[in-house]
Length: 126
Image 1 (tube, rainbow, N blue to C red):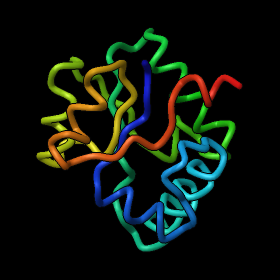
Image 2 (image 1 turned 180 degrees about the horizontal axis):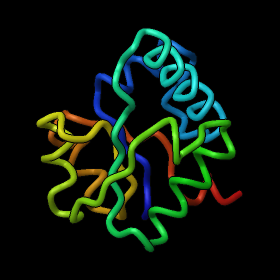
Image 3 (image 1 turned 180 degrees about the vertical axis):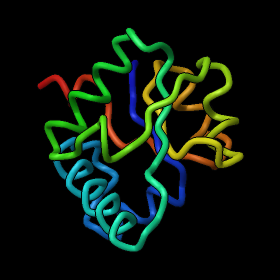
């Protein structure tokens, strides 16, 4: 049930760079990479993603996926710690741009209309 979820704003930027709602980690990662580099070239702040704990599987999954897509998780984004029950609210208020957590926290953002699930653990680890 682990997923990577992003704000609707980030999702719109990813779609502009070729992302589709098919949970494909490679396509979504390429689109996120393009968005991150576009923001950096324009002088924008790095995207902020949350995980549940510094040593959680979520942290490793997020970092693995980002690195596999050519995104340096230590330099091109910021990773912060947020307790899972607060992730959807942090996304909705703009405190974070995305997160990796288990269910039901990803579906909570989708149900609230404030986030989009980009990919899932089962697709990342293939």
